Length: 233
Image (cartoon, rainbow, N blue to C red; front, side, top):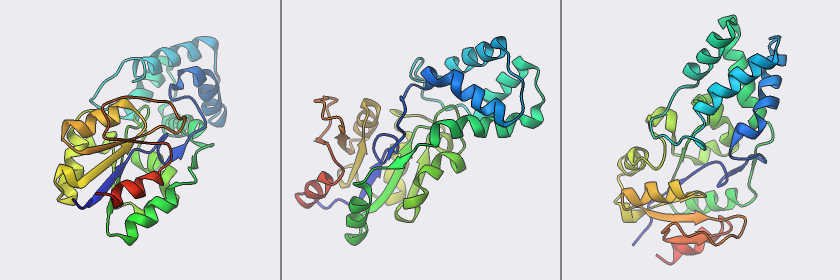
């Protein structure tokens, strides 16, 4: 069976953020960074109010499938602060920037994408964004490989987070693939569950070498291992 397309998660799969997946441990630093960049005077109460609202939308704490735009989240924070809304957009961007500024592409990504390009395999990304991050911000993390990516999906433009099957259905539809003609590669259980929900083939990447069992079809420790899997199909 020929593989026609491969979908990739972003964080932990294509991009290393060098930070915890649960942003709550860095709320204080991120809030302070964003407010200092926008000349917002912080108090301990303001920080605690913002942390309480952010925690409410933290999907690592309270999982959800329906996405919430960042404008909604930060409007709630600014309303609580009684702060000038003119600073909302730039404060929100600075908050995201704090977590993205150390993002770096893994060293095995380009080789796999070159293989796909050379073999006529379409590539997509489908990522769950954090705190309603807009696509133009979240997808900036893959700007270096944008020309390789035929379809860019986020939980914001899809409307649903993984493991909801909507994004996986869209990939199959856009690429005109049967489920057994496409792989999805991710580093978390929800990536595998989402692929399985539409019978798409799944690859779990475990860069830390841990033996995780999420009912995935294949397990790799580096993306380059995918090349041999595809060749064996």
